[in-house]
Length: 320
Image (cartoon, rainbow, N blue to C red; front, side, top):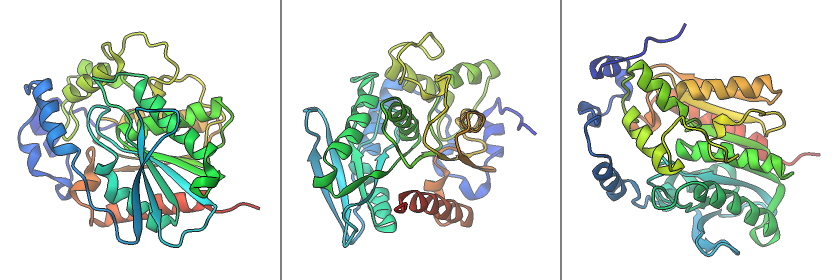
């Protein structure tokens, strides 16, 4: 049964599981100047996190793309050639950095025993579409063409990301299919898939926490260079707008049930399933956008992360 759409800040807060409540929910940002908000977010949202012990982290230039570098995470004693993960950081396409994901990327490297690559894709509004999707796909191409140097089995690559990174991972999976590149799995964590969510949410008068409707409008407008919902002909600009999802890599998707991206994630999973693409979808009641960061030790979060890791481990295993 569909949840009632919250139309006041109080209703939005009431829908949050108390375990996932955060102090910064106390003040809505509907009236916050978006340019000021972007500057504030960049000051706090791109800070380096710690690299996990047992991992060598190195910044590498991506050949043929002078504007692009990537962080490469090499766990001690990994199999060579072995599987690899292309991980794309979140931040609404307007904030974030590869080194902001040092912690999660290096943890993946250890837990999967795999090489992890996180490109520092260009951000909007300074670099609108197609900069970010082009950079992410260029990183995948580098992994494939330099597989021997990187110690990668090109037949064992997973792409994944969270939030905006999840949307970019979906785009990489689409482009990989269209260019004949086989991926083992696409992992989409609370993915930012469809600009038209802005239009639907505004028509409903929806209010959300953690990632709000005004923030979503500003992010998509910055990235697309036009208002959300307007005609868009660029094939990899908005993954949720793609008509044919047939033949894409299998997908693992998770999203909170009160996340602004919940419906677009559920719709994308349904369409993948209808197109014959294996897709595992997990939704979490009472969970907002980025709830995993608020309560990392919560049993639900720990179980979700175990399931995500197991899906990636299975995808990266050698096949006969």
